[in-house]
Image (cartoon, rainbow, N blue to C red; front, side, top):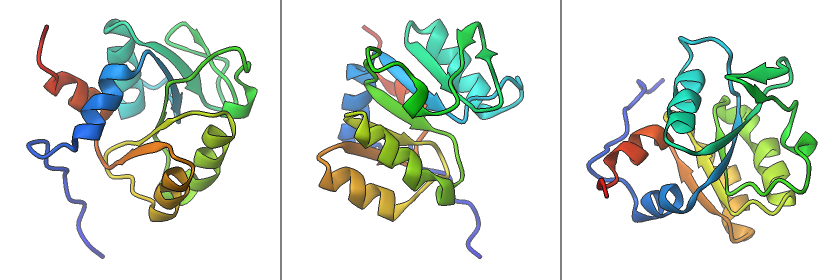
Length: 146
């Protein structure tokens, strides 16, 4: 088995920067109430930076003061989601991407260490943009300060 390889943040795809710049509302799938979890730390950072973050986790009612939904399907349709950020194992990603596309979400983001080629093909076939294996927070931190 190949060792976990960290992404090269000196070589972030231009599309990743575009998505981060254009995103206002994020559905964060795999959000955790546990402070030590990366998904919690990323959600907290994004809220502090002014993003609207909707946590998705079937085991929680609320995370960081935000109402938590069991799935993307359960988020009211009037809430427009710009980007779905996924903190789930690669083998669990495909149905989440299918749900996101069914909602009309145009940006799918698989966090660091998460790659699923089948999900990528599906997203691209649906004309959605997809980023795999990079951290949304870290890419945001690389944006030039205005």
